[in-house]
Image (tube, rainbow, N blue to C red; front, side):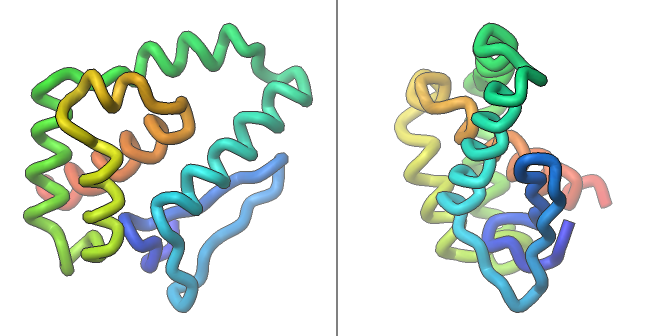
Amino acid sequence: MPRSYSAVEYTSTLKGRKESMSTAQRVSVADCIGATEDRLQGLVESGAKSQGDLDRLSDSLDMSFDEWRSLQDLKSVYVGNGITSEAAQEVFRLLGSGPDHVNGLSLATKIVLTQVHKSLLERVTS
């Protein structure tokens, strides 16, 4: 993953082709969600995944309160050192008032938030 995704390092795979963002290219969280939506749509259209597969994945990515709180806290701790202020604001908005809000979001949004959380957790352990 490249160094300058506005929230965390990011590489997207769209329709079987890998696209890496150079450090000069800043990508918003919304852009990452859009790219993920395109990828998911491509998986369904190609027959690689069914809508049922994606629904099960979405259910498995539902956040608990502890996960939601952890992402809120880590996002705030790492602003300016791992996450830009713009990305932190996007994540804050997406997290809403609790896990019930997040759990009602699209699969693509849950995937991106999970990746942001994973990347920030890795900073804690490194």
